[in-house]
Length: 469
Image 1 (cartoon, rainbow, N blue to C red):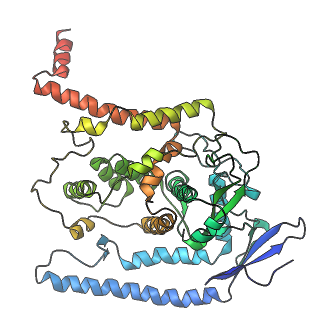
Image 2 (cartoon, rainbow, N blue to C red; image 1 turned 120 degrees about the horizontal axis):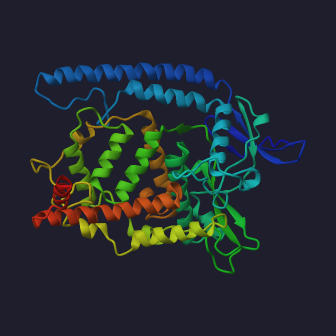
Image 3 (cartoon, rainbow, N blue to C red; image 1 turned 60 degrees about the vertical axis):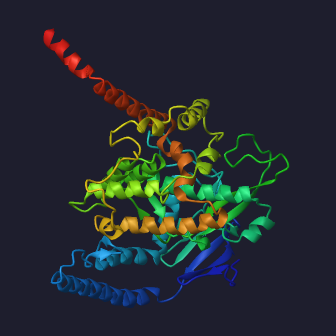
């Protein structure tokens, strides 16, 4: 059976419902429009010429501007970030050509499903992705779904995949009609953030195009619901639970180890409001140009924290870790989760301690200033950054995700929603060890500074004792 009326249509192709002969499975078949490669060849050749022309023009503008004493250059800058239009175009061209080869999309979809431990019919299988402590991550199947790909039937222009009906994630009226509450929609927004935290920081591979057309909500009927399920605690009368669905992996991007690790460091730096950690993370990510003024960058990050331009919503942190107690987790893991919650919300408040600590590596201090105590120009700060192509796609994914998340929950932001799940991607034991270290180091430094102010240097006394011996 093949339904000649498409389920959906877009610029590159359209999707039809069909039935496989050998097992009667219902599938969705994505068919590519004709002559797309010819159109791409012509359009992209023209765009390449335009990119080169823009770079040439801005170089001439700089040469002319230099005669009049202008310091900030426009050539080699895109939005203030050091980069050329031709370089950006070449990276985008590679991605665009991959999008019209459905064999690449099939491979992307299979990797995504494998990373999250999702099999045919949405069943849980073992993840290929591991947390940072080397342990296999739990399957995301209870809260995430993606269509299974029938690789043996797929070609460059035909993609055959499991048929997974859902409600479009932006259609709130239909979600409400399906019985989903505001709490359900907030939960879905958290699932979206959780999915991207795992993609960025452990899978090192992500879908770059999470717009509403590529995201759905599957309404799962609950039978014999178990207490403590990862899906979300609901009332005894509830009979459904939502599951986030990812479609379309024509555009996907891989990250290098330092890129992935740097993104995690930035997220943790924002969660901890730690200026120095954020700047160190920028360096690890490879986004700072040679000779970048780190003092000015620190000052700008600090200013953004203090003005609330960058912040983690406490509402999110308090709500945290919903859905973390999966039946697949053992008792010791649950103890670790409880311990991490205590560390985050306990009496050891590093921000209180740091108010008397002059160490630049501790959380933000109100007296931190640049040498000249000057306001920092945003354009100048942006000139210290370069933009590898991967981060352009990261920024695009976060921007689209933010729009979808706010449609579900007006208070949504990626950092706040994903923060409770740092324990999942780092692994319980590593997370606890790192959090303890964050709390203890400022105390030790504060104690050391206090002893020095009192004229007591324990290290000097220890060295004198060693000389005597």
